Length: 440
Image 1 (cartoon, rainbow, N blue to C red):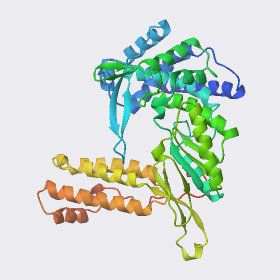
Image 2 (image 1 turned 60 degrees about the vertical axis):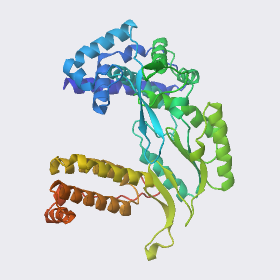
Image 3 (image 1 turned 30 degrees about the vertical axis):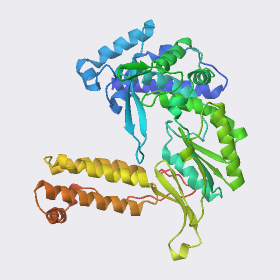
Image 4 (image 1 turned 90 degrees about the horizontal axis):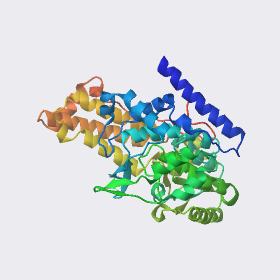
């Protein structure tokens, strides 16, 4: 009950800040730092960090170790350091992760657990202030908004005749944002010197690479809790300029964006405007992912937020007069699913109980399907279901050192498919001008 009451106080704080910012778009907040080190805010920040799990930073202290040695002790120390102005973040640990469907590697910065807690506390306090300003075209990493809200824009606008699409993403966006210009954008709303000093310390702390700390005057490193909010604050400058200087309808999910236009000339003007506005921000579109696509029957499609989009005609003979924008999991998303299923049924897991293998498969399949079910994904779901069935049957046969037929026989003899979920019948097709969320 006490924890619920504390969470309610934090939510009320955020609502108060949001209402104050919304009521006065010109207001600049000067008394926020005391809220960052409030104990209830730090406790809420800890819960967010704990829930997200994540690896240790350069100090090698894990979340489990913090829980073992005392969460209250950590939060007391952080609150005291913040109040006294003694808090100093550690450099983040730099790792590289492979991008799905690409040979590229994405740099990821992992702050220490204690620094993630402070970042989460700062995010709790400053996010409502900026959220009051963010525009409807922005969807990424925002409360009560999701990738499917952005995807619905494509369905709605294509139905309205905007079928010339500019697709791109911003090259190295999180690494390229200039610190000085980002802080200038922050200062449009926040003038609390201690908060600004805290944010600057988070940006300038650098990353540890091969035992050496590297610092730069640009970047909100991916992996930091507060980085998505700061990215949105900076790219809000793009959103604002687009209202007066852009062409077509913009839908932006963090650094990934599309512009829906009615004509080829409008799309070309939109791309030119986009290049200009990004250049003014010290950014640029990624050349390999920038193009103009015409959505037409029999034409090519585009990938956006994991889905492939294509203009198709209804198959039902009675509905052949209807054409619409369909979407299904992209080739990269399908390959990721196959690779993950193969990994979960690999030879290195032959000694595991079948119940554990099935549980791991089900956890992944439910999560993957939970995202891609909002699309025209029936064919792709059937393919992934068959792939999972096959891999599990082969795993059973290998575990018992039998021919693959043994695995299929065990699979067929089981009344519940050995407990493996089926994705069949779970698809929800999108409709233009209708909310994608059930019940809305």
